[in-house]
Structure formats: structure tokens, C-alpha cells
Image 1: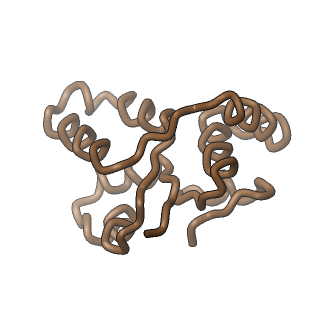
Image 2: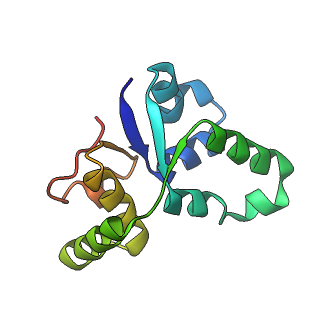
Amino acid sequence: MRQVVVDSSVLIDFLRREDKEETLLYQLVEKDCELKLPMIVCAEMYSGKSVWENKAVSQLIKEWLRGMDLMVMSLKICKGAGEIRAKYGIDLIDAVIAATAKINKLPLVTLNKKHFSMIKGLKLYL
């Protein structure tokens, strides 16, 4: 089973689209990928208004989390994120996501490839 780190863009796309079968998240599940979720992405998912205003959205996120392996943020990831942010000038959340994937030597699944493509040593899921 292939392990991949999932960026929030993939989850948000699934949440917003009606044609769920056409989303990258759906395709990953169909391919039996093991979905790994950085803790910061979990926080991002809970930061949307719809989560707190719509029980269906809140329930969906809760179900997702049961099917994904949450990745704890370590000191090594913190340092890596700081280095990535300083070197590439990306926002801190993206730097944490990139460092989590890079340090764990796993490909990152994202719909925002331009945010991450310049980071040396980071594998993107293609």
C-alpha cells in the first residue's frame, strides 16, 4: 500500500465538488493509498466557517479523520519547516506540510503544485 501525505487543497476540493468520483481524494482511495494527514492540515480543515455552521460538513471531516493517519509535528519537522520557509519564502502552513512529507520521505499530494514544486528534496505525487 502506497503512503502519501495529503494537503488541504485535496480535501477542500473533495468537499466542494459535487462530482466526488472525479476528485483526486476519491482516486487515491480507489488506488488503496494510505492517506497521511499532517496535524496542521487537520487544523486547517477545522478552521472553515462551514465546519461550525453545517453539521453535515463537520460530520464528513470527522469521518475523514477516522480514515487517515494523523502525523504529529516533531521538533525535526518544526526545524525543517523553518528552513523551508526561510529558503523559499512560502507561508508557514505550507512549509510545515512540506517538511512533514520531506522528513518522512513520502510524496505530497496537492492541487497547488506551484506552492511546493521548488522545494528541493520534496517528492510530489504525480
